[in-house]
Length: 359
Image 1: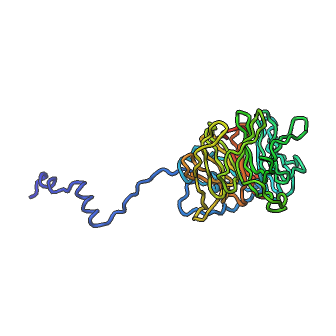
Image 2 (image 1 turned 90 degrees about the horizontal axis):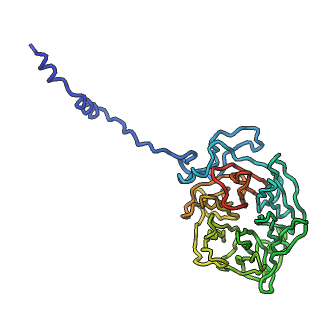
């Protein structure tokens, strides 16, 4: 007769039972789960945006599927519960957005139509702002609230005064005409920095056909004396430019590369490559207009829409658009709204970060 003690001694332990079961049946391994940032891609990324009704009549499920996180650092920039919106369409080649904080409007250029458009924030109305504009490209506002524009046809940088007159800021260097000023930014010391590629003198669509008299370069105009100085010609076709949040670095989009320099007063030094952009799935991309946010990230108008590059040169996120995005700016009352001018249309999205500078 078997005693209770013998029964207990013969009963296998729970560990032994599990070991035996595992030997008989191959148990599936449970993978370790890592927290993924919202919108993180789970496979190959397509450069094409998700199909949607851009009229806004059909809601978009959050998070917006075309806001793509490539690096967890991008989570600090994005707002989960907001969509990309198309605010206007009807331009030919949209460029140069700039936010006016006092007027609460955003102005941008339609270069082939020789016009500047205005988006008014309080009622989301779009109006013709200025025409003709000498095929203006880049725009910005100075610390006195005056608009500055880079003209292709005029081959100059101008400022619109409060009385409606126009002041020429720069149209030549060492007695030779500029090519076609493209983009411009202002510094707190009152200086104006701008790029001068030859895009606007290559065809009549966005300017005129003319011979180049000076090498493509980046210039600085002194805010006190008005003296124009060439700060670097170590560029191929300089396009967009922006300062880092502390104004210690200058970034320039140049012929498919992003370059950077240390700002040493009125001069630049230590030029080097900042980043080289690429398309999802491979293939080159290039930045047009660029602006910096308060975190030091550089936001670029670049296929497949907007690409965002961290201070270490790593692309951390992107926004896919159905059109080629040329340029961007930060605006809105809190400067946390990204305006994106893309070919025929104006798009916008709210962010969790803000622009580093006034526009």
